[in-house]
Amino acid sequence: MKAILIGFMGSGKTTIGKLLAHQLALPHIDLDDQIIAAAGCPITNIFEQHGEDYFRQLEHQLLLETLTRDGVLSTGGGTPAQATNLQVLQETATPVILLEAAADTILERVHNNHDRPLVNSLTKTDLVSLKDARRSQYHTCADLIIQTDGLSPQTIVKRILSFLK
Ligand code: S3P
Image 1: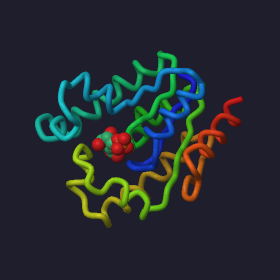
Image 2: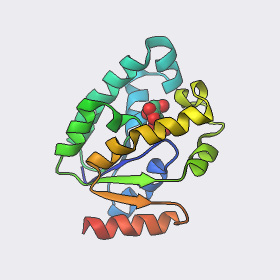
Image 3: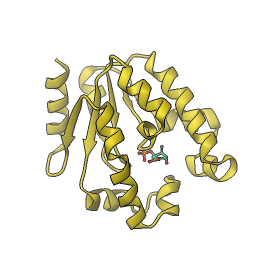
């Protein structure tokens, strides 16, 4: 893997991951999409039918699998929040890039999203608390931290590319 993007829901991991992969002429791998494909149903259904623990097991297994592939990986917002994943992300030789965004930006972006079960089950206040609670885990494994507020996707990708050089 050439780069791993981490960050809270709505921080732009998928958008930036796709652009970055395109610039690097590498495949873009979205961990959530891998989980959906493995389970054969949307994330909301996985949470409802099998529970979050089952989702986290799949997430861990697929993180390990995808890290052996070439490309740019966009993780899920909760990926680094699992101790086993955090250790993997700390130990990997692949650069881990944290995208940060203000709570208001995040809330606006995740609003009306139908396949984010945590957005449906948590209040806005609880989502912001979860974001704060995960901050140290994100920072523990990040090699590059980008405050994305006010930056265009192109600028963010340029910063990542110059870091990767
Ligand atoms: C989650 C984030 C989601 C997805 C799942 C759980 C989380 O990914 O993995 O709904 O725990 O923050 P995105 O960050 O891509 O929305």
